[in-house]
Image (cartoon, rainbow, N blue to C red; front, side):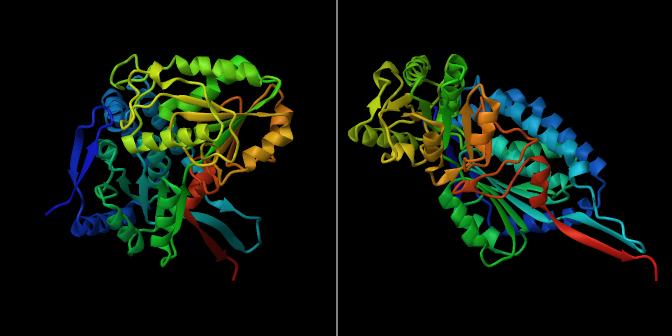
Length: 463
């Protein structure tokens, strides 16, 4: 009997999408087709690849309204906020397409009489992209578009929570005329995913997900000499200095904590505020959080949708309960949010004070609408607390002093350091992490390096 995946929408708990899982024969056919198509695509001029992929982006954006509503139904983000993901997809895709000629150009070395020497960026072959549900297009586009631009074929396995996203990629590439077989999506079980990575045929894996998932990918690839890019989440800190523009900091830090119901790998999960502005910041943050409207994400007035599933919400509720039992103070009354109900994915936002790093909520990834705020007395104390984490994806500082921001940023263990903003990926900059946030890099010129291999040409012309 064919196994199936079922996407249970957090909106109302019903089955929104059901799809058969690919069997061994389908996986083998996809791999064979990818290899055959890539053999020709790797020699296609970059300008022609640009034209095809630009047409794919155009086709995708043309369906933006439908895609936005599907996101809301599949993973619960308010429909009013989902067009932003379509816009982000477009921004990243067009940027990576535009920079490809320079990023993939031959690397010249110093002249040497009688020789022609250079380094070429050769495609790897078949890239396997494993994408998550929380930002289903923004995470996948980071790997899919540059992998194709670099001359690779792509197999995409999307989360069972967001299967339509993989199908939207395929539709856009079909409309654009991408060569048959060069891109394929596969609905796979965890075991089939591991088997595909471990077996011959895949040359690189791009994975976005949990730390446990990253370990599983590494284990599956352990017997083979293939690379893996691993983006594994974070416990991202924000530091509000005494000289910060407080209204701007409150608005943006709290949005960075609660947007997408806190289900963002680079969302703000812990806040350190200088003692001089701590009380004012806390008061403003709590007031802002109390103004969120929790409810059905399909309704346009909703500003906070459900978490992806009830178990995820109950995990966060457990962190909050443990913190309060250990002395933390919860500033938001869940009863003020009628949609909040234990055992469901609908969860009110929560701000905790009187917290410390002995509490799980300050050290363990929450991935939900909760944030703790700690008072600090100096930059040194803030840096020590920011670095006291197993993660290091992004961190932010809120200050009027750019020199201080640069100096402090050099001391913070993180992949991206923000000043006066957070929870954003600039496609011109490298997207990377340290510690348990993973390894590898996507986006920017640097992102093309893990999707290609250097091939040296050493030609003796005078003999």
